[in-house]
Structures are given as C-alpha cells and as structure tokens.
Picture 1 (tube, rainbow, N blue to C red):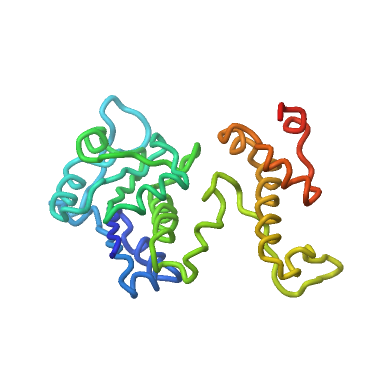
Picture 2: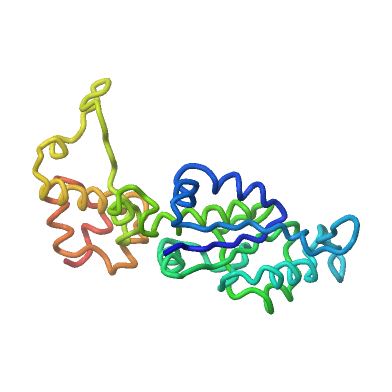
Length: 252
C-alpha cells in the first residue's frame, strides 16, 4: 500500500529536492510513497502572491495569513490529519513516527516567519508537531525529518525489513554500536564476540551494549521503563559492562 504525504510550504522545490533522492526517491519510484509538495502561494489572488502580514497588536516579524493557507488546503483536499510543524507542538519521537506510519496518509503544514494566524492552527489543522525545544526559520526541515522517520518504517522502503526493529528507540533504548571491516584498524579492534559466528551470543551482546549505551547517554529512557530488570543486570554482568553508580545502588 502506498503512503501518501502532502506537504504545504512556501518552498516546494526544497521538499521535492530532498524527497527525490536516496531512500525516499527510490521508495517513491517503487510506489511505496507518494509525496506531494504544494506551494502555499498557489491560491493567492494578488499580483505579489502575498502570504503574510503584520500581526495585530504590533510586534516584530510577519504572520502567515489564513486566506491563502485555507484556500490551498481546500483546493488540494489532502489526506488527514493535517499537522502543523511549529515549536509549540508535541515533541516528535519514534512512537509518533510509528503512529503516523500506520496511516494511509497524512499532511504537513510548514510554518514560516513569526508563525501562522491562530485560526489556521485552531480551525484548519488537526495536530501540531515540534522537533524539540529550539526554533527554526520554517517548518520545512522539520517536515523532512518527519517524512524520513515515518517512511523508513513502511514495508518495502528499506532494503532490510529488520533494520527499523534494531534501531535506536525501537525498543525504548539507544541502538547498539556498529563495526565493519577491517577487524583491526590502527590498533583498534572489533569486539571478539562479533567475529565469533555465535548468533545467539551476538544478540545478547548487542542487547547489553544497547543497555550500556543508553545508561551512559540517555538514562531517562531507562527511567521510563521502570529501571533495570534483573535480566538486564545479568546481561551487563555477562559481558563485563559497567553499571553507573546510581543504578548499581538501586534495589534489585
């Protein structure tokens, strides 16, 4: 089944350029994705194709006007939900990517300038997404991040169907580290377990490495799971991977 994603933006060529390359481009050619970029100026009625105006009440910057945005969306009749990319939205994460990947389609609206008229947010859009606690010049980069994160979860988009299952956040942990040839480079060696051919032991080692990596860099993810289980501790012990003091002192 093809996943349709419509993007409403002032810079459609930016979206088309990125989504036409690499994994997204191949998936589109193969029929797994249908990504459509729509110019928000298409429904303007003045010679200058005006899409923004100064805010009521004064203040710096310009605000995207409701008329061209409503008119463009109404002309296109895109798949819902229509999601506004903005700093005030809920934070995008892997669980939300999985949620969107299960849909037949959805649409993204890229804000610009100081933001969009409130009536766009409250009456036209169904949801809001943010990449995090920082501000970009517009929603295009955020839209592309959402598209790629979602698309790679769809069947057929990646060459190896198991790839998304092993990646960071797929099971609430950061991904385990990777090595490739040569087995030794400038005195730096690949862990022996990965060269052993013992697939069951490699799988246990990777789980332990993912736990250790997460404990070191994103302990909040472990907190969300209620801490380390006894099985996790045993796995870390098996491969002599250290447990940070805060976890080592917690009740087993």
